Image 1 (cartoon, rainbow, N blue to C red):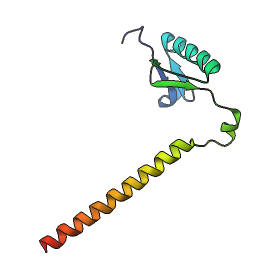
Image 2 (image 1 turned 120 degrees about the vertical axis):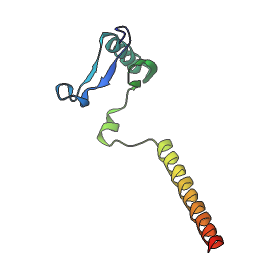
Image 3 (image 1 turned 90 degrees about the vertical axis):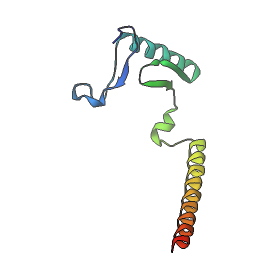
Image 4 (image 1 turned 180 degrees about the horizontal axis):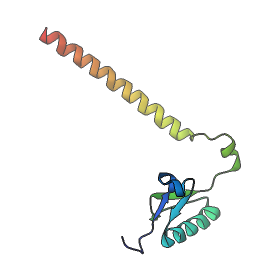
Length: 102
């Protein structure tokens, strides 16, 4: 393992590090930089945060009632409709094949 490669992980896999964000010096320095940018600009995205891709600053109100964004809810609804339509097509196809065979 390269000592210069940034490492950041969720410590939940290890009892000694449970409920902690763990990392090597480079990873924690990158996290510090990312946090500073997020505090200033609201978010930071990059490939220098180990297992993570970004840091976001959220309002206190979000933590009182955490919810997905409207875009996420809409995307999930579209995905559900597509999956239901796919299931319907599979049932129609299976029924048609069953009728042909028997």
